[in-house]
Image (cartoon, rainbow, N blue to C red; front, side):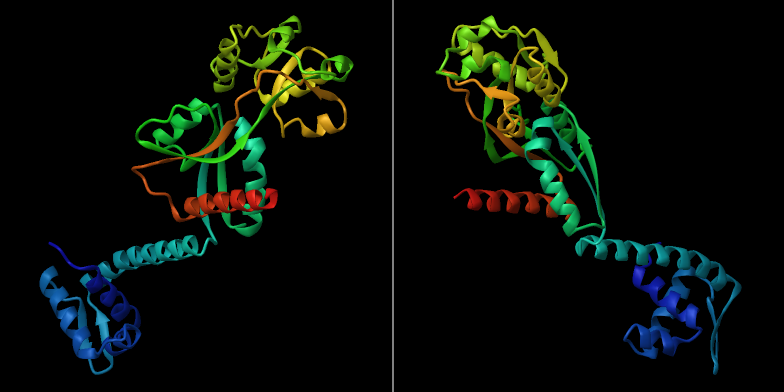
Length: 304
């Protein structure tokens, strides 16, 4: 049996106000139409729902049973419509975002701070993993979108959009000021202990390829778990390390660490936004995506 939602909506108002004329007023219809629709509903259900009188209508026992269920269903519909309206106006919503560590510190923390000020009703669930793990989360549908650093292997089912470039620098503690006096070859730096992110990370792969390009082998003495573990270890002179330039900018300005002027140029990397080609973004997630793009455009204009 297929009965349209409109029939139940009309029944809800007629039963609630015990009046076909009141239901017609609320639904911007007329009483003959309401009567016609309720007669059809009774015929389809095979029972009487209303007892008509000059004073209005009252529910039969069957009508009361139906009203209990219709009331619950209709209230759920109203709540769903309200939630969708709030989502559309960005007054509420939930976004799940996957982010790699470098992308988190170079871009997403500032974007999230501004986004939360603009849309305080939207909740954000943040998943912070390596680039490969984060991309897998998008592929598995565990996050709405992801922001990661390259290198990144993007499956055919996903779409990647470059957001910004960033540069890595080799840094050393301020006790080695002689290393910043003139450009130096990468091979000469192999005399110093090396700190870098561990095997299995895309950063390790990136720098391993960088070393191989010049006939060298990446052989770290210390493998860190996060970028922010590298910085204090360099400050305490445990070795030289690679950092995204903006991550260590305060320590560079304070003179706690020094940039090593390598002759070999470290290739630039990118921060990318990754999303599914198959699953459309929610209203809130799409708003965050646009917010990120606007942030990048504003940042580029400021640089220009």
